[in-house]
Amino acid sequence: MNIIRIALGCMLFSLALAAYGQASPQQAPAAWHEVPSATLVSPEISSDQSVTFRLLAPKASEVSVTGNWNGAPVTVPMVRAKAGVWSVVVGPLKADLHGYTFNVDGVRTIDPGNADTMRDGSNLFSMLLIPGPESALYTLQDVAHGSLSQIWYSAPFLGTMRRAYVYTPAGYESSASRYPVLYLLHGGGGDEDAWTTLGRATMILDNLIAQGKAVPMIVVMPNGNAWETNSQGFALGVHPPRRAPGSPGFTSEILRFPQSMTKDLVPFIDKMYRTKAERDNRAIAGLSMGGAQALYTAFNNLDEFAWVAGFSGGYPLLPAVGVAIPPPANAAQLRGPDITRTIDTDKFEQLCPNLDSSVNSRLRLFYLAIGTDDGLTTAHAALTKMLKQKGVNYKEMTRSGYAHEWRFWRISLADLLPRLFQSDSK
Image (tube, rainbow, N blue to C red):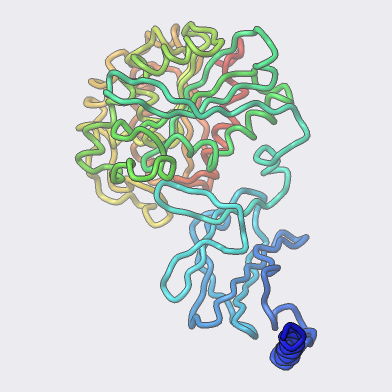
């Protein structure tokens, strides 16, 4: 009986092998795109910095790729080849960090062939780094690297525990030295992860410190949304609904975090880290919403901060400060929020009562940055006009062709860091 079973099993196995051979002929494809596989390459960067994008979507009728290529977002249709592989060549692109997405029959999606992704608020993007001198600060170099910790701290002012990212420079763990501290704030819709993922802050810090251009420093990147405890995706099921910048709930709470920062976060960092805990060694900077929060925090706490910076400051977000205006003459070329809003400088002054010429002797650096195509240029111009009228000294950095975007804020951070905690910053 056992011999019969063994023979029957061998016969069935042989039949199965024969059937498999008939169903799966081993025929090499004429080209890679005729039989897509897991090795489908996307994106593929050519020597001239043009990029080929590919996506396997055999049942799709229309596919495109959208990216912020060298400025405003551009959508490029993709072409279908055999076996349902869609592709297109874009560029040449500038050396920079770009985000892009695919659109498949109206559905937005990231590139499944690209493991590098980034999150901007609630939006996910595939990440593309074009190498070159302009993007060298954003790349991993053969230098000494700092450490990035994700810490929790108690915030009694807000009645909750909160999460923050803390960068410590190379050598921190093995030394007894104390370091100056930069508090770096994100924009509306962002959270404590933004400056690390989108801003490449740790890479920029490592590289500038290694080059001797920036002072080794501790950098604290908190969650500036008073209604949140942590970033999206970290603690599933406990993250509150997102609040749109400018909404009533958003605007009314924008100043609660700065108040918590000076009461809760700064004392915690000074207790837990080897900081130089005095104003001459403490800086605050931020982008968009964070830029407005940075100025509010600094000019209400001049005994705490001697260095302050705002990148594309979202000053119209501050309570009662935003004022509607007609579209400016160059509105068509502007990108970003508040194209038709500026600020009431009297209301801004009420929020920052110490903002007058007396700050010149107290601040080591007051730094403002804006791209010429940013929708906030009118609000920025109103602020700088007020500062000039009051005799307040500030350093301004502008960049032609840049708008309200991360590629500008990375440049702003790289320009600011070498100025901080230096004796000749002014």
